[in-house]
Image 1 (cartoon, rainbow, N blue to C red):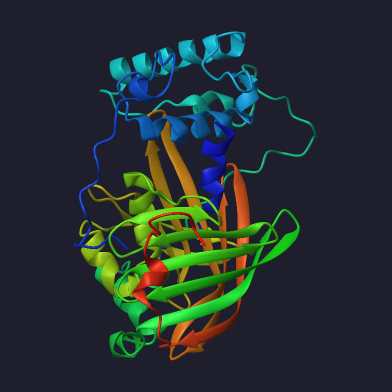
Image 2 (cartoon, one colour):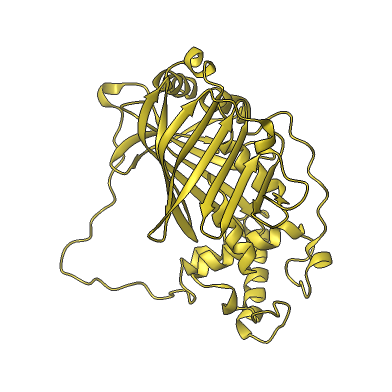
Length: 359
């Protein structure tokens, strides 16, 4: 199970494309794992995300409920309690919310193994600070439409013509996580191919989208195909012309309430589409550039967010961020690009999943 959770850290997160191949059939969880009870019937590749959701909601690791090396064992009371809680959550959502996942583990736990049932007392004599009121548009100005926000984004990047003059990028830099820096390469190619290579002392790790599906691998081990949900998420990251592709990927984009991100006032767009992760896009009101993208992965127990913050934009024929920070409930890392080569020749084989061990 640790391996399942660790997989979530490997994706360096951004395009769904019409050439996607149909996902292979996935067996039910009970046909792949032993002693499945409350999660019977869900696809086997959703067991890992469901466990990640519980771990993030309770702030625990796998051994809180499971016996190391014997995950099927029922020796720990916490595992039996977790089953009862899943049944309770499903019952509440079925009876009170028409089957929609509105109540989750995180509703009560909020990162604590034991939910807090008693309201906190005041710890000072200072008056409580009321939530900030939303600021209406100045001077009665009307809010921008979805199309206007997207058009401003395209203009801020440099325009469609300038974007199409670039068809590939080879980037090198460092990945920072847990106080360590590791060399990294990010190769991207239009319209939607991407591979990220982390050069660690123990070998290289790969996260890639070949234009149709995603895969992951480590030096000396067989590569594995991403699940349909993982592949759809990484496809968003792989869209080379994202400002031009987003409307096709998410035809039902709608405006959200303006928000402030890291002190920057932002316009917000929300997008959903069948087979794709729900997304939320934040655009700097002053520049029109994308400052944050959030993806939401559906699990059997609730949605897991992935947040990507963009910074250090630089004009290299078009405006691109040279730093992005990827944050999840169970991990966070940053990528800082130090060198960019535009329109360099990149063999399509660099994006293809190896037939045997990754070299």
